[in-house]
Length: 114
Length: 115
Image: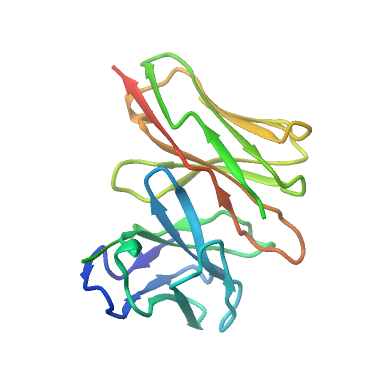
């Protein structure tokens, strides 16, 4: 069974703090993603990665950065948290074109910036 | 880039009735269309998907149809049950040699099945 684990389910941070959201997958997947989920806006892609040390901007990258030093780990970084970054963050992974393309999501991290 | 619109945003049906959720997409190159179900407090999970070389796909009470010409696809749930109550997301992506699984999602439909 595919497992995508997000290290923190609930976080409360202050404006201006640096925030790290960690994600680990245990299925040797090539692709990893960070989405943000807001009511009425669906799931919006922040950043994604197709390989170690590789990253590409999604649709809403402003205010975020990512790191993928190891294949199984993909971190989302908020350099200076702001209240408009209060949201649910979903990490996801998928295999490769050979093994299939279903995206598997983590449980989500609820971030509140005060 | 791709833009996916989803309707309705909320849907309430009587148990046993059918539910239909519709999505349109903008990029004619899109060729992969999955549907995800998200129960309250849980992660989205894939329930069915369709590729552009297929017009319809069924899995028990769930079916998806695709009209490439009109660039729209729909989710059909028959004989709805209370456990079908959830938020449903459609998505679209271009699957090719140089692209990965970069899905663009719709805004979601909250389905409520009344007992």
